[in-house]
Image 1 (cartoon, rainbow, N blue to C red):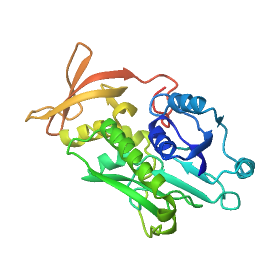
Image 2 (cartoon, rainbow, N blue to C red):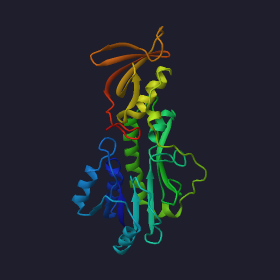
Image 3 (spheres, rainbow, N blue to C red):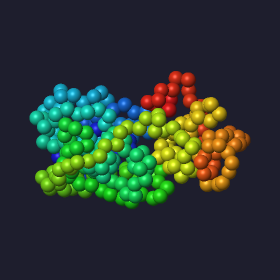
Image 4 (cartoon, one colour):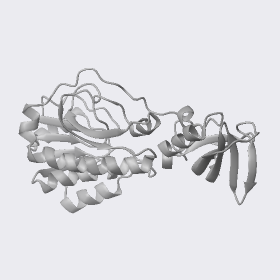
Length: 285
């Protein structure tokens, strides 16, 4: 099989699995990265190693025509920010790898909601690419368990590892999986998180506040303490009976801030000020 792939560094394992299975790479598509959560240095280096073309602009119909003329059999979408148009007139196959156990949790970045929703298991899914996001028939999936204290970074790497294994399985049995793909039916959609979702509410319990901090991890939460709004990078918390009003700054020393919550305390260990030009839709700067 000759294939083109849309990928970023976090999904390079999918690309490597198909290459290791003997599939021939002919082009890489990338989309904008923030160099905090999304990077593309590794996939660009891999493309250079393979000697294939890279396109960082949006994939258009003319690109599908070009792929067809070059004998491309399949388009594999591992990570891509843009909607892909009707591929069927030009390619035999197009699949997408989604970081959730579809049909649960369709949407652009569902792993944050997986932690906020306190799911006990998660997974990754390979499905046919169709007109709507994440709704195509399922070729195969790979599920794994979550711990009680899962965090954004642990779930992210678990998803990467599960995706790599799934990709190897799909690459080796592709025609069988394609011909026997199962329609999804009804599912759920996890919306993209907002600044409100990232904002800590100190009137909640220690468990709820810490769950939100773990869910966003390096994306960082936002908190307002003594009328000053900051990014929260790392914190610890514990339940304890006290007489403080939730949200009160109980102690500040060595750049650490101890804040009262409903049933205990949260100490913010690493934090930074929001820049003046901060926009709620950005990750940080």
